[in-house]
Structures are given as structure tokens and as C-alpha cells.
Image (cartoon, rainbow, N blue to C red; front, side):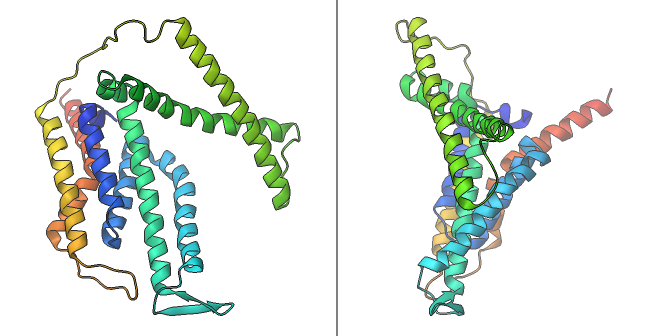
Length: 288
């Protein structure tokens, strides 16, 4: 992740928030698909193909679940595909559910990439002087979530090894999940109390805060921070101007090629940065 890590944390924060906002504030399926593809490609470039394939086991079922659940609750739409107990399952409701699933998965992916790229040090650097307690809370949250996930996995494996968690019917699986949740919750509360006591013992908050380093904005950082919101605003504005709607029928106008170029540039910037670093490295190696 050298290409992204070379950028200022403030510029990275602006970029990832712009990408997430461009995804969250549009319903156009082509822009949502571009956002999801860009997030997946960026994830592969930043974290590797194996990590991406493991993540797909979460994102794809989530998208399909939302797409299948929306027609069961939404009655709008003129194009009936089939009837279940006298209730119409419409094409429009299915398409809207699929778009909602893609939107949610894309936003979650962009937030995960932001957490990886900016990190706790970047959050502390950005907000540490103006909002020290907010920076501390965000940093601890970013570090807390992966620890809890890893702890839950280890707890389930340990309880399965001693026979406390068994695979069976739904009731058995729910009981095992609740047992793991109870153990993880108790451990998390205990770790929180230990962390608070440790910080109090070390005198946290009693002396002025110092910055370990000072990061300067470069021309590339300024360009990234200025270009990202502009591209996101263009995508959001054009998606609204296209008049795309799902109900009562799917209607809308195609997007101009310039908007496609803006969307691809916005959503593929991390992958392009990594590709640039790889090309530079190979050129350096070829000169040795």
C-alpha cells in the first residue's frame, strides 16, 4: 500500500469520504456498479487477491439477501414476475433491492479501505489537536473491531473443540452463537476496564499532547483533496439529472461518457496509485 501511504491522512480521509458519499447519494445502477467494482479492485490492489476473495463471501450474500428481501416488503412496481400467496414479486422491487445491496456493500468496502489506509495514526494526526477525545475514540474503535472479530473466531473454535458449540438445527446454532457472544462481550468489557485503568495510571490527559511527526501537504495531496469532492459532486449531480427511477417502472437516461470517465477516475484512484508504484519499482529494478 505504498502508493496510498505516501499521501497525507487528511487527503486520504477526504478521498474516501467522497467515494462513499458518491455511492450513498446516488441510485443510478451504473454508478453503483462502478463504485462496487472500483472498491473491489482497490481492495485487491491494497490488500491482495486472497483477502478480496475472503471478503466476497460476505459481500455477495449480503447483496443477494437484500435483493431477495426487498420484494417481500415492497409492493410497488408494475412488472410482476411471479406471485407468492397472492403477493406480486415485481421486477422494480427486485432491481431496487439489488441496487440497495450494492450500495450498502460498496459503502462498507470504502469505509473498510479508509480504515486500512488512514489508520489510527492518521486519525490521531488529523483530529488529535482539535478534538483529542474524538480522535482517541475513533482510534480505539478502529483497533477494537478487528480484535473483537478475531476474538469471536478464536472463542468459537475453542468452544467447538470442547463440544460447547455444535452444528445442528437452527435452535442449536442460535444457542451456540449466543454463547460465543456472551463470552466475547465479557472479554471486551474486561479489556475496556483494563485499558481505562492503564491510561489513568500512566497519567493520560494530565500533560500537553505532543505530535510525534509533522506531515506536510504536497502538490499531489492538494490535488487529491480538491479533485475527489469535485468528481463526487459531478457524479451525484449527473445521476440526479438523469432522472433514473425504479418505481413505478424503471426509467432513466444513459450517462454521458464524460461522467463515466469521472466515475472511473474517482473509484479507481487507489488502484491507479498502487499500479503507478509498481511500475516505478519495476523501472528502478530494470536499471540496476
